[in-house]
Image 1 (cartoon, one colour):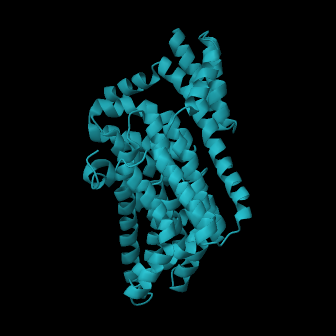
Image 2: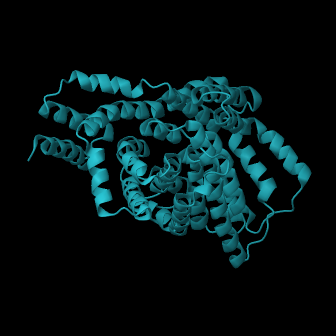
Image 3: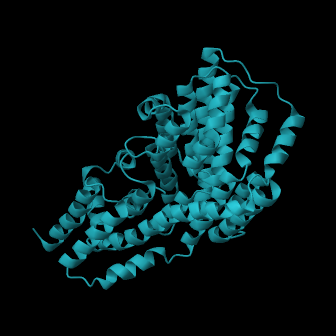
Length: 428
């Protein structure tokens, strides 16, 4: 074997063995990178240099503010107001509780950007509301988990920021402009399925529509909805950078939580900030080590080799995109989202460039794909949150999600092969 082949074997082999032994992804990447650097007789100072360089990125500074803002909104009393607004807007439709679930998660996901936070904050209310209209606990839990994935697409999504950093020259503004209609489209697909399900089961409407009540509900929830407006308008229309808009949105979330809604005391800020730091530290460490790991991956020309291997099998754009989605879907079942974004994105970018597939569109497709992974065992965090909130077992929750898996995969295919669905708000 050549030196390069041995180095690749060491890098990949050590990484996979450590993952099999349940070592954390960040530690596994770090050890695998160091072993490969030593074999190649590269100075270990490079590990430190590229580790530090992994977090020395101005664009990435938006992520801490997105996480803090989402946590403030999550614990700041906005959840009940969003459900009330959604109920007034769509509760009059057949199976109105399911429509409320979809729309409320769309609103909340667009504020917090976290499926787990969505399920934890809105899940108990949404499931109880659906049960009161005749839906089974299983169906209500499955829909609650599925609708939470919208938050990964609708700005502010820190996962879109991480993808932009990993992919290189990809505009966060363009991703936000593509993510909003994609998230809404996913909600429409889930809403249509729920409407048909409710009509076939004969579920009644919730109540009549009243414009005055809807207006009052909108005004009550407007403080939280302003977070979406600040971030989306600020970044998408070039008023602010992603970091600046994230900082302003975090400040506005702070004002909403403690001075407008005032449902939590100011002393709770310490615990909220601590929870945000815990989430951020996990991402920061992973991003830093992934950069050192990614450098040796690039040094060994692994992305080019994989691209040549795939392109050697077929040059059909449809087949290649389908294969890449299958890889992402598989990895999403066994690895965390941040890990996959940081490791896989630099590998697939050369392939996508070769076949002329737009990187903004791929970013949306990849994030939705990973959102499905969040709902699949064995490491789907959102699946476990949904199970805990509903009281159903993990296996039963996964079974309840089966029809929603199909709807999300259908949405994934449509987003992958119909560019217009993500280009509604801009031409990139």
